[in-house]
Amino acid sequence: VGSQSSGKSSVLESIVGRDFLPRGKGIVTRRPLILQLRYNAPSASEQASVPETPTSGPDEWGEFAHHPDRRFTDFSEIRDEIVNVTHSEAGTSKGISDKPIRLKIYSPQVLDLTLVDLPGITKVAVKGQPQDIEAQVRAMCLRYVSRPNSIILAVTAGTNDIANSDALKLARE
Image (cartoon, rainbow, N blue to C red):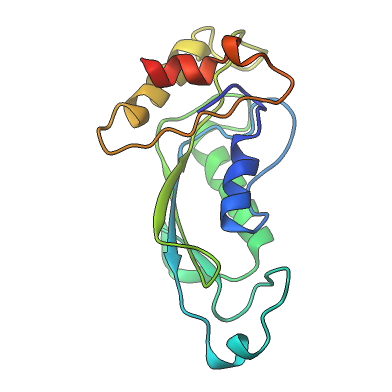
């Protein structure tokens, strides 16, 4: 959890080791993304040469719950699919939806772990957003972080005073 544009999605990408999440200004993450990381042992050919920067290969792919029979091996296509399904559910404006996107990433670079990327906490509605956007995002975040088995990763931009962190405040609730 964290404020809008605080770097939450970038932290998740760092954990995965791949760039695959949409980027932009303002509210970009507009639906929860349930990201299931699954370790996939490298094939014998990939074990022989381990690159410093992971490249998409036969041992690394993504699968969406809404496309269970399709493997996305190009991580830029994963980004495009997230944008498309976000637009189809939440519209092309700045609105949000609490209907999650479910994505599994299989890779020899990850451990088995489930992460959730949530919309950032915002204080003021901008054009195209409902006036109660802050309450909607806060309620959505609380539904995920209040689960007893959740570990909350509170992200605060390095330029912000941690004493004023919306993420920490929400985590304490």
